[in-house]
Length: 132
Image 1 (tube, rainbow, N blue to C red):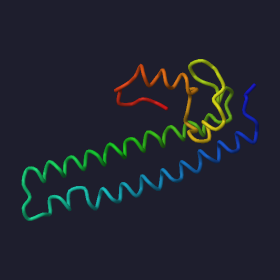
Image 2 (cartoon, rainbow, N blue to C red):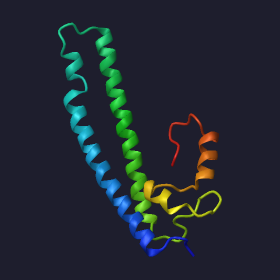
Image 3 (cartoon, rainbow, N blue to C red):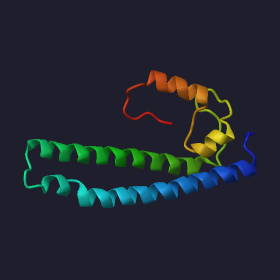
Image 4 (cartoon, rainbow, N blue to C red):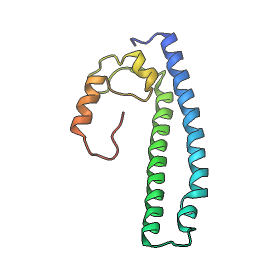
């Protein structure tokens, strides 16, 4: 039996949908922005040299990294929306403890309680694709 009430689940579902909508808009804005400015501003300068080119590449890499992070978060939210009605939603994937409702509203993609998440972050420090 889940510790989450129907009202809790409804609030969490609304949080997922709200975060998803905002993130989709952000991804679209980032894609539009990267297409307009990625190299044009930096390389369009008359004095373009190797440092300008390096800056343009770095800006492109940062833009791609941000977009990658946003896409991973988008997939996590979609996965949370699929599992919100499933048995065990809101229980820690590591220890089985109840994940607090406030945590699930703030971060609906959370699959670990705070204690297990802290351990995970310490043991997986520096890995490029940690999960929340």
